[in-house]
Length: 169
Image 1 (tube, rainbow, N blue to C red):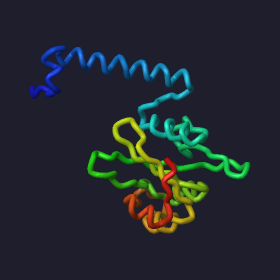
Image 2: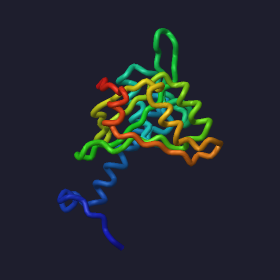
Image 3: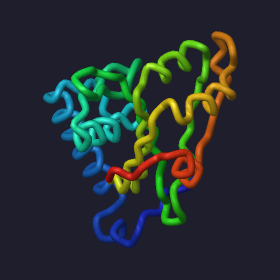
């Protein structure tokens, strides 16, 4: 059996001790999230959506379906879509829209804005906002045109900026 290799700290504390500490901290995080009403903070990086909604003053959605959050614009509530990607030190990866069925496209169209979040680990580095109307046609081009969830559209940050995305954090 191949053994996982962690930094030199494992030679001092032992791998089992480190894994146990991680497990205990994650359990504590899950307990805190449950107290907030978050059922599964780790599913699909739900914590990034919650952190983003908090920073932007949006109301986050705890359900595993539907809008990621809701924002108030001129006294009206709109669903919002959040897309996140990691910056591994070489710049952010692409932002991806998956499962682009007709139903998914209609849900995206209901959003006034879409937010793009760049993270490093669990830390939000930057947030960009773009009006859905500026990119919905590009997303729709990749839709399956049916109930099929096969469609996918990727965006790179420079492309989003050229389409009108503005950095808000």
